[in-house]
Image (tube, rainbow, N blue to C red):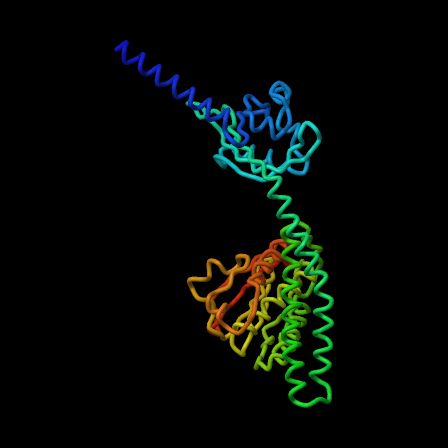
Amino acid sequence: MEQSDRAYQRALREQLARNELTFAHAPIGQAIVELDGTWRQVNGALLQMLEYDEVELLAMTFQDITHPEDLDLDLGLLQQTLAGEITSYQMEKRYFTRTGRTVWALLSVALVRGLDDEPLYFISQILDITSHKKQVQALQDFTAMLAHDLRTPASVIAGFAQLLSTGPYDDEVTSIARRIERASTTIVDLLENALTTESIDSGRLTARPTALDVRDAVGTAVQAALSAAEMNEQELEVDTSGLVPAVAWVDPVHLEQVMTNLIGNARKYGGPHVRVTTQVHDRRVEILVEDDGPGVPPRFVPQLFERYSRAQEARTGSQRGSGLGLYIVRDLLTANNGTIDYEKAALGGAGFRVSLPAA
């Protein structure tokens, strides 16, 4: 019995030694943090990232070196963990180093509880992602600059092409001008989507809601779709007889872009008949856009609102697109406390139901 106990104690010491070595020599920052935020134990990678020596850091709390804009979210998640609402959490946050630099980190936190389920301390893993964040920001800045600088010349090309297509020229010149107009208009649309996506990704997308009759945005989007159909020599009929007075609390620019994307998609991928209806229900304004096309393939519905997402049928079709339209629509609506859902349309094709707070 005594020999068995000694073997158990030896195995336990070896296990503790392995754990200590794993903690100390981990390539990413690791820490044991008290319930009040005080650092109990930290490893070398964390000290190197934060530029503190061990004595200095152990005398501080994580709150002391957390960027003020990230602290409330971190503390809120921590309180949810203590309350048992979640068992762990992960977030991106910024720390201030000893020399005043700001470093971005991917923080993963788990709560350790005792035998009676009482909270004991937190285990934190902290990965330095500063370099990655800088690369992403540089790419976003380049995309925004390129899209902004190209938007004006593309719009000029589209405008002059439209003048040529309606001028007193022979059929060949008119046909070429219309092709230029279609191509340049597509470029303008893609650039607008790129700029909006950059605003979403950078967190600069801000809604400025006001009381708005949604019929105004629908009317603007319908006219844009009819003009695009004429330019592309498409047959299109938009039924707006189901529009009723419906005042929503929404950013007018955002709603116009949402409706332009949805009705534009119905024109490009649906059939020649599109129907837009509105209703007010439970203090929400609902807008339904339906078409009589083939609809969305069932296997693709779960990916419908993802970035750069296009069904195989759309990729092999004649319509060009970036796969950003519905991703942008969803995020614009989210910024306005709105939602969007896909459903099979009564007309037989795709149906998109937008819900917004009523004013």
